[in-house]
Amino acid sequence: MNYVAIDFETATSKRNSVCSVGIVTVEDGEIIEEFHALIQPPNNEYNWHNIQVHGITEDDTINSPSFEHVYPEIKKRLAGKITVAHNESFDRSVLKNSMLDIGIDYSDIDLPEKWECTLKIYKTMGYQPAKLNVCCEYHGIELQHHDALSDARGCAKLYKIALEEF
Image 1 (cartoon, rainbow, N blue to C red):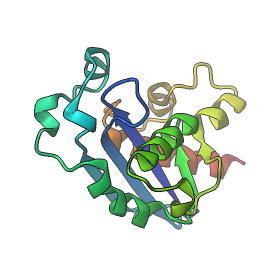
Image 2: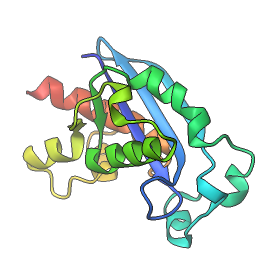
Image 3: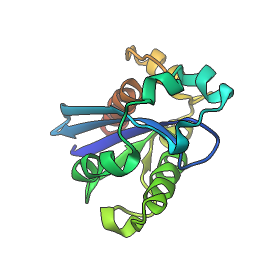
Image 4: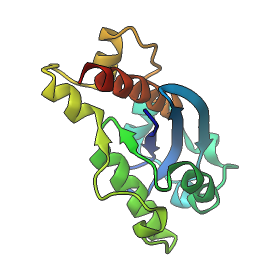
């Protein structure tokens, strides 16, 4: 039961527009570390729709580090570990595109091509819908939806429940 759960929030529809990341490290089934960072997306550009989803604006990230400066912290927590996300294809794509943007190949982080996905797991278990907020509410997991750290924590707890049920 050792894994890392991650969640990204983006500033626009572009997959390289990270504005927030949350990472939760789990060892022996217990959360041992949490990491959160606001990240200035390219040109600090935001789409109004994304702002409505997560509430992060240009003002929040004007003095935040770029992805390039936060990447070493992300790599330190993820490299070579089982990585979980609620919609892994989105979060993995955001990581890959953001890495490419700064000239780093995905192979640098030593992760598999697909991660564990609690969305797929809970769909397979029959949850309809299997959205993060719905699954967390069902299991009594506190969640501030679309806050990257809260979403990563919720995902970590859902993954633990799924591991215990299988």
